[in-house]
Amino acid sequence: MNDLLSEQVLVLNKNFQVLGVTDVKEAFKLLYSEKAAVMDQEYNSYTLDEWSFMTTPFTEKVIRSISQEFPLPEVIRLLVFDQVIEEEIVASRQNIFYRDKFTCQYCRKILAKNELTIDHVIPRSRREEFKLSQEQINDWPNIVSCCRSCNVRKNNRTPEEANMLLLKKPTKPKSVLKGFEFKKTKPSWRNYLRLEEKDESNLHSV
Image 1 (spheres, rainbow, N blue to C red):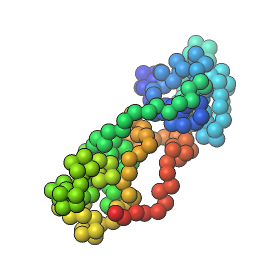
Image 2: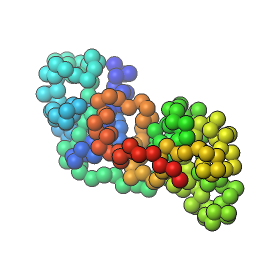
Image 3: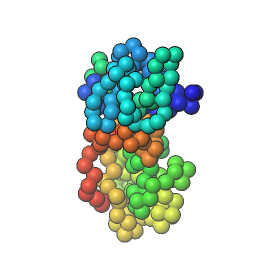
Image 4: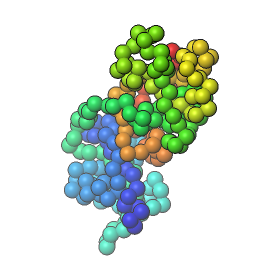
């Protein structure tokens, strides 16, 4: 039971915008107090009582009370909160990995956190050559996730000099989903996360 209660649940605001994640225990508190509703993959909304009668849950996992049985919720929507939590998004190592979905921006491999490094598109040692400030050289547009082999291969060169095209142009994200790795997201989250993503169908080089 404790393992089920600690599983992750995607949290949306009233306008279906992603706020982040919580665990099942906290999700049930919100559902029980009628501050949230359960969402399915087709954008249908359910009260907690309605959810108990669902016959096609996301998974076979269930939470049991004395009198009811509930399929494990994987997405909830807050019923009163319609804001997006604004905060300064720091270009930290972890946030860079989140933005790039744990994918090397050169060879496209999806890797574990401990297999990734940070690459400066314009090498830090060449900051003055490219007339960049200390802040600019360490900001979102100049930092990407990179596997170790690509980092070694690129060395002290720009992507053009190394003939290594970037998967996409690095930018500061509007928001960073905290609490989970993109590669570990659940299938039931995908439609909602897709609403948050920009069109990344075109590859960019810088």
